[in-house]
Image 1 (tube, helix red, strand yellow):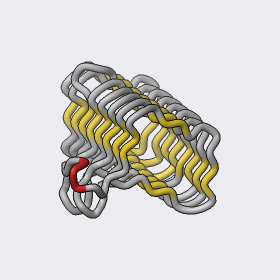
Image 2 (image 1 turned 90 degrees about the vertical axis):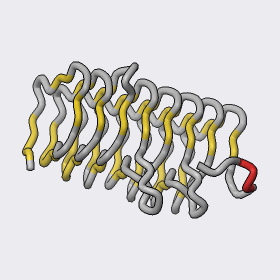
Image 3 (image 1 turned 45 degrees about the vertical axis):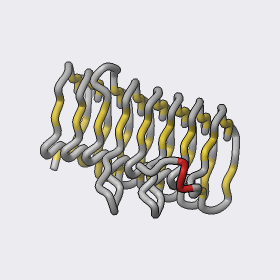
Image 4 (image 1 turned 90 degrees about the horizontal axis):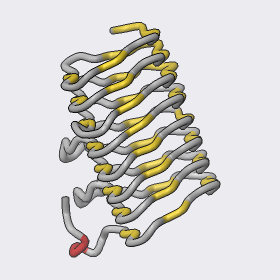
Length: 193
């Protein structure tokens, strides 16, 4: 990652709050750095939502907890190459296509260093977690998540405990996926590729 010295990166040094924010078009946070808590709960975005690496290779860094509880994204949402250093909470998110996958230019994977939850999230289109790296010290949960389209976890690394119980996936792909900790698919309904 490039540092803030290049002057192109947007940096939020303290807590940032987008609760109840409504974006009529595209919302781009490419290459941004959130050094404290970032709260996007109940935010609605009608256009593309992007937390991807920027053109200079800066990956989005969430230094504190990132909350997206009850957020609604009506178009594509990208978190390609993002780094979540604190808890990442996506409970009850509603989205179309989402990409928690590597950056297209640098191949930097999305990484979750602490707890991450997608409990009761609803993805209407493609949900890509390909090559994602999940925490080895904190749980990863998708309990009750619903995937209407393809859910791909191809080559993802679940380095700690993973709860994919009660997920409902029209199609799920786990080619090359590594589950290093205790893993539960209890009560899951999946059409597997």
